[in-house]
Length: 207
Image 1 (cartoon, rainbow, N blue to C red):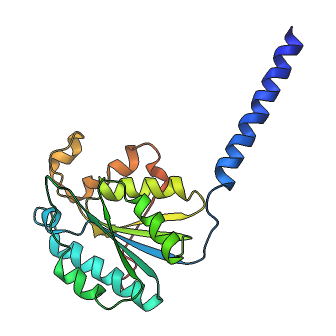
Image 2 (image 1 turned 90 degrees about the vertical axis):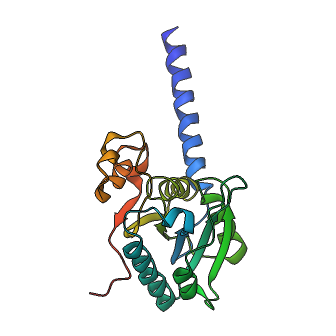
Image 3 (image 1 turned 180 degrees about the vertical axis):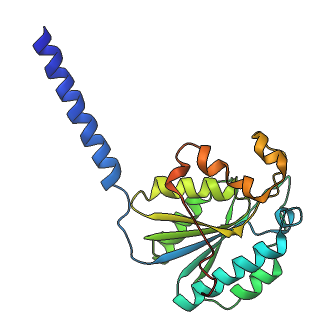
């Protein structure tokens, strides 16, 4: 009886290993390069954030860096019939205007990873590194980062802290009630799986 149980356990473990390996290796292959993902830099979200001017300026620095490097940019816009988010900030749009490697997609939920994957497939974009920035750091940016980590487990997902902010001043975590900018990053330490997302400084800033 014991030998039968041991054999069944071995079979189950082998099957689990094969299943895990298939989940990893069935994912898209790495395409070298970096894709920038700008998330919901729209009027409704920008009007109440803690530091609008600084966030927009940092985003523009990263856009210019992407253009210098020839990196692709995926611009995500949140859409809602009941609560429109408005247009993308005109300063951001001005720096994207005329850049042929910028691709705009609408999303209807916090997680914009499906739209990013669609952009990669339609335009053959890089997926080695995803560089995320925009709004809100503790909602759409976080969930898009988690979504990309799930869909592209071999890729590196970076969130540019300087180019993100949040207007969520009254969320469940008590630390947010302090209205301190540094507290918007609490979710990246307590949200399941968020440790896989790298928080980095503004890459567009010159040394």
